[in-house]
Length: 458
Image (cartoon, rainbow, N blue to C red; front, side, top):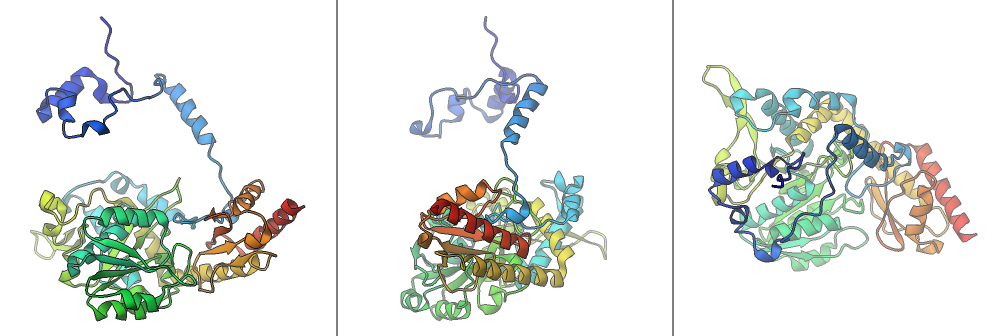
């Protein structure tokens, strides 16, 4: 009799373990367990997996070989952003989040897990000060989730179904939002003009069916929106909401959207002490004022001060837990699963270390280096800017005048050790500048680009 195959890395392939799991859920067979999955979605075959490496040293060698394929780019030569950014991470951030009480903590009750709950309360407080808002959630899975949830909240608060998108939004974020809010709302795109919102057109489209005007500043292309106050007035004229996506690292240098009329502010905290690890780490935030109409529509957990059984002592625990899907389960207004709590603690450490002065300095630094890089690069023959807006961290170069496709420029610059940006199409390149790119780095990048243009043409 042939022995059943037990995969060394997949415990439920062991017959005894599989049978115990089936008995626990009341299913006679695996097929019965998956009965709710439509037949046309099933493979009806074994997964095409490679043979397992049984010896630990063989597995270690295999994984090491895969990791060797990764290529590191010097921070000063990295000009790629488009959603994940190479910002400096102070050593103390990694030191704190690698402590066992934070790194391994997942769930827990307020009175048995004070450290994690207090750390997240401090994060929420620091983010509230940065955003100039009263209530900020425990981080969602990522910034895309935060955007989608913020807009879903707007539809519930207003009871309306139309969302106007009035800035250049990252296509992947827009795709996530469309997919997520489909049961709640229709998404209407209002093309930007010169990189910023077309206020006149928006004014003619906003009506009693509009749930929210959604703007991102900086936009996907790095443009800062100058008309937030006007967009707020247009939205509020018909009792719609202004939902604004923002970059927290910019708020030490630019006015917070809440001060210009934003009702719900969202974004990603990847820039606040989180490494760009293979496309991560990411976590989303949502901020609102202390208004029950808004707070009670936030599906995410909120941590606050709570009294204990001992007079004069306080702990940290859930605020208005009854509004969450954790309490309501299938009756919840919106489901929120695993949060990125560890990244919230990292961002809290980063914000506490930087303080108001540090956030102002880094915001100003990135603003000035973005402007400098844009000026230097567009001074090259055939390279132009695509708009006249003010930019933070990112901007688009039009290279059509050089006669060299953007993809070719990227390929050639990579041979020189540069990661020059994201190709948007044949003629446009999205370039990113952070505090890690010094003026000398920018000058060297411009010189390398000039050499490539001359070499390709020759």
